[in-house]
Structure formats: structure tokens, C-alpha cells
Amino acid sequence: AVIKNLNIINMYIESDKNIGGICGYCINSTISDCIVHGTIVTNKSISGGIAGYSLSQKGKSQIKNCFSSVIMNNSNTSGGITGINSSLQGGIAEITGCCSVSEISGTIVGGITGISNNSALIKNCCYLDYNDSLEAVGQTSGINEDIIEVSDFNKLADTEFYGLLTRLNALLLNKNSEITTENTTITTVPHEETTLLTTPLTNFDTTTAPMTITTTETTVPAYTTLPPDTTNITEISV
Image (cartoon, rainbow, N blue to C red):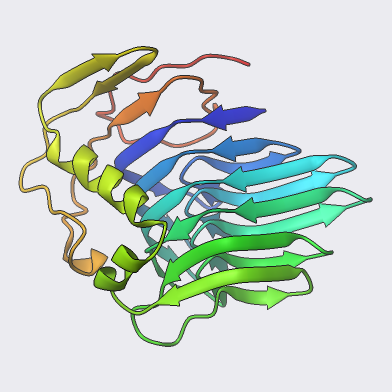
């Protein structure tokens, strides 16, 4: 499967299954250029800002150029990008060029991923550590290269990931409007008192969960739980 250019804003997902902002479980898949913002709640399983469980098995699994800003309440394994990033039977599992500014809880947690194993690769990524207590990977036997830890939002301006934060803030600002460009439609829904990402995520109002999606080529997993008042979802099977 290929999922690209998908932005999910102000989501709320609650489940006892593997859960992620884009998908709960993916195998030999590519997720690229996506932004996820909102809240994930689970007490029994694996959660990630982008994908719950990313697995390569005799193939290649990639998550690249993605950005997550998620409040993640979990008593199990969780990470800013994935809960678990794993390769089996000679597969190649990669997380590259991604950034997370998420608040994460769980038994095994990481700013990028909770668990990375079997030579899975994490490279050129960035995460925000609010309390100076978060490692990039909670538990790893994989390969970790060029990972940046920042302690506050201002320091993101000194990294190559600042553009992703700027894109998210632009989406949060763009209320009650629709912009169409070549191959891309941005449709937004009302959200009172939208807050930009300049303060910790716990200050956000999570009682409502409208959603904004930008897509040029998208497959949305049917099992992903979405808020009841979502609108303008484009599905294109690939």
C-alpha cells in the first residue's frame, strides 16, 4: 500500500487495537509526506503518531517525511511516529526524514518509535522532548542515525523540519475555506478557538474533533476509527 500527502488535523481516535494516526498496522508499505495532529487513546495495544505497527517482511516498509503532533495516552508501547518499527525475513524497515512533537505515555515509549528491532533503520529524524526524559527509541536492536532531540518549539527553527511545523500551523489557521491547486484540494471544517503549535499539546481542546484532509494520492485503511463529524474524505485505491 502507498499513502502520501495526507494531512489529518484535530483527530480523536480511541481503540483497544493497534492504532495510528494514519493506520494501525502496515506491512511492506510506504507512508510519505503526511501530517497528523490530534489525540490517540488506547490502554491495551500499540500506538504511533503515524502508524501503530510498521512491518517489513521479505519486502520494504518506509515512513518518510512525515510529521506528528499527537497527545498519546497509552499504557503499552507507543512512539511519536510508530509504536513498533520492525523487519522480518530480510525485510527493510525505514523511518527517515520524520519529526514528532508529540506527548507520549506508555510502558515502552520513544520520541520516534517505541520499539525498533531486527536491523530496522531510523535516520535523519527529530523529536521534541518536553520533560528531558524521552529517548528517540524506547527499546532497540535496530540502527539509529542522525536523530535530533530538541527541548522546545523554538529550537525546531534551527532544523530542516521547521517547514513541516509551518505547514501544520497553516492548516490550523485555514478555517472555513477551500483552496484548489493542481492535483490538490484543501478543505477545512470549522473549529472554534484553534490553537497554533507554540504551547504544549495539553493546552489543546480535545473535546471536539473536526478534521482536515489534504490528499493527492491516498488509501485510507477501512479499520481506522474517525470522529463522527469528519467530512470531505477522498479515497483513492492504489
